[in-house]
Image (cartoon, rainbow, N blue to C red; front, side, top):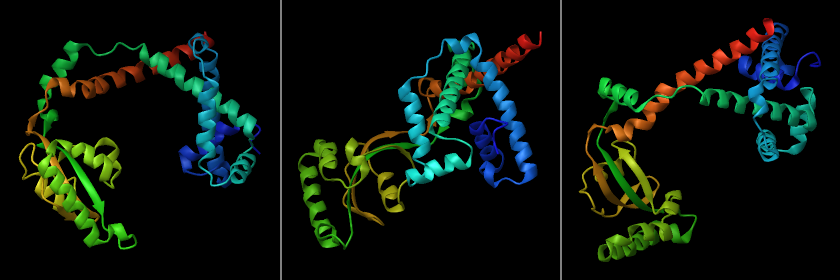
Length: 281
């Protein structure tokens, strides 16, 4: 059913255009997907035949990871294999298609990397001409310790959880510098792995019960025990970043991305045009 066009590219085209697999397409949709797949196939052929692609290496590990990612979309391996067959592929053809797609992607990135990047002068000029874009609210850099309340577990029933938290609060009262260590050892939030670090937060990101306390705290202050819908918390306000214009140093990376990405795309488009122009000449 899909022999006339690359099955993998057809699968991608059907998903891109209609959010379906080729076997689910009606006749007009099928024709549109085939047309796109044929266009993509020609483009892929030109790119892979280029001198730039000769310099690109796709490792077996990269291909294996891509294949694993595709298979992980299916609950069972049997369904994965059945889906491949239904769309005109098998593991071998999928592997070849993934290798080609990865090489195309890396070649395009290589071409994009050759675009002239924004200079420090251009970045600074953009920053000063668009200061309003870098106006930021007050931010609070915070950590927390969480003990959840869950009657299904004896150690998390409210009375026991509160006793546990009071013990931690007493330890923090004696040694506030141990907050990160205590969070790592006792907090039941995934942030425990980073010492309870919540990061830089604008107002309104946390539960209301936590938010109101955090934004009333002084820098370096540790809160009393707070209860939220998920349990008991102790907050530490490590640093306050006042509202205002973010400094150029902080805005630099986002400005460079904003300025460089259109240049990368333009370089890639120009390069693709040159591939087709060379063959037509």
